[in-house]
Amino acid sequence: MPKITPKADKKPGRSTDRVTMKAKTRDAKLDEGMLTYEWWKTKDPGLRAKQILSSYAYLQKNQQYRIKQASIFNRVLFGKPLMNYAINSKLLDTSNQLPIDRPAMNVTYSCVDTLTSRISQNRPQPIFLTENGNSKERTLAKQMNQFIVGEFFRCKAYEIAVDNLKDALAFGDGFVKIVEKNKKVQLERRLTTQLWCDKNDAYNQKPQTLYEGDLMNRDQARGMWPDAYKRIDNAVKAYIDGSSESSETISDQIIVVEAWHRRSSEDSDDGMHVIVCSDGELYCDEEWDKDDFPFVQLPYDKNSVGFYSRGLVEILLGTQIEINKMLITASQSINLMGTPRIFIDEMSKVLETAFNNNIGTIIKIRNMASNAPILKDGTSGLTEDWYAHLERLVQYAYQQSGISAMSATSQKPMGLNSGESIRAFDALQSDRFAAFAKRYENYFIDLAYKIIDLASDIAEREGSYTTVFPTSDGTREVELPKAKELLRDTNVIQCFDQSSLPRDPAGRYAQLSEMLAAGEIDVSEFRSLIGFPDLKESDKLANALRDRIKTILDRIVDEGTYTEPDPFILDPTGLAATLTVQYINLYSEVKIPEDHLNKLRMFFQAIQDLIQQATPPPPQQAPGQPPAPQAPQTNQPPQQ
Image (cartoon, rainbow, N blue to C red):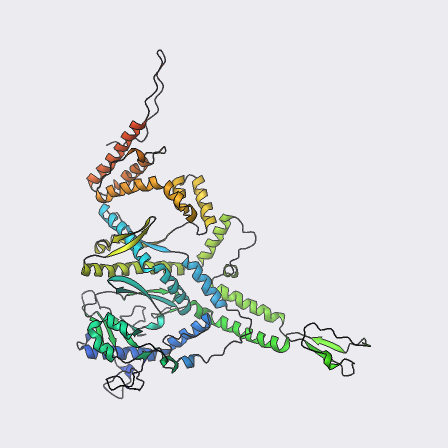
């Protein structure tokens, strides 16, 4: 864990001795863990900072096993210990190293990498849905959906989610912290070893108090809390762990502990958020009214009790260790017994100088008897049962993770050639991870709520909050709507994948072609959904009319802004009239303002007038001939 080691100086906190944070007790006979610090009830900032540091130090000491386990899991996965916040990197590095020339078989890494690649292909998008909402609520929901997409794009939520996904598989939990920087929402990855809570407090998986420890450059801390620059200057220098190697650095860092206490109820005022360093308090929010901490947790396998979860590496640890032991045995057996040996009869006439280190050397001898004086031996001593047991262990590891060996090696079963069968096989594989995939979706739902909550606080303080919304034409700024009006019981937020179509171009094209042939979509929708980069410009031109009509109709519904149609809005398929009728039918039941609905009807009538003007007059009939039958009128306005 971070240790505090001040420099040699006469100033306070500048001695050469290594300092470790310890809890101060009122009774020397009592252990530091016997005391209960309710720092959120303390009014003295100095005493409150000491109590937070003492509580944080005690949790580190009491839960050292978490650091050791995380370092073991990281070593199994990546071949090196978890250096960040290791209790003592020297002690954690004493485990036996596998031979360098061993036949490597890291099944754990194969399972983690395959599952990360498979789950991260989904890009869940939180969407606000209204239950019997009116037009105003639907408009707010639409604006909020654009805002969420923009914030995910700006904060790189999906890129950070991949790191959290791998952390969940490796350590059990992936954490992302929602913070404010430069008056904007930012997302920062956090390791599970940076967050601490009491085991008894977190027995039901919802702790009331949470601590976060982190190392921060001293200059960065001065920029974040300029009013506390004296405390930051006096704060002792801290290192990653207690080893001598960790002090060999040119960085000037201090330890910063952030503590949260959730309010006991909606009517209580005991919620608090405090940030401290070794010299005192840096920030204090005595009106912390949030019902949760500013973290989103992605668990792999939730334990029955406790705040922390179990990861895939922990599940596969015993199997991987057994595989490693067999690999060590194989390496030693092959090196000792697998080397070709030649046994020579003492009575043979072969000269010793004829033997060398060359492979395949031919040695000529005379008068070779039937009982050959030269015997060759190159067996390794490994039986077929040994190889069968190793194969069983590998297959069992894949079964534990739910990943087939074919998926790990990007192979498909024999005879699986059609696109439909491949999609069915892919869906069957995904069913094994349905529970974890659902937790992955809930991760984005929680992330959306907390981003909106923090953005609303910033907008209330600064007056407004804007984000960047990506569109097909580039990006545009979107302002945060009145989120507090939207976060009500009549509105719910759900997660949907950005696309239910296959992700590979061949599968996407095949499914859309089937939908086009069945009449489920038209050609313009086909071009819009196909999304091939090399066809982007031609698709943009082909869908320009549809996009223009929908933009005009959306302005009428949302703002009441009417745009008179022109002849260029007409096409042989009658797309403008069809879309207008669909909008009228859709918004007639959602209580939009009556003048907006009347403008939709006006727009439809104007289209009909343009169609009438563009229709050529009927040909003149010759005298004495009956009139030609009239074609039935289409796209008539709905009866009032």
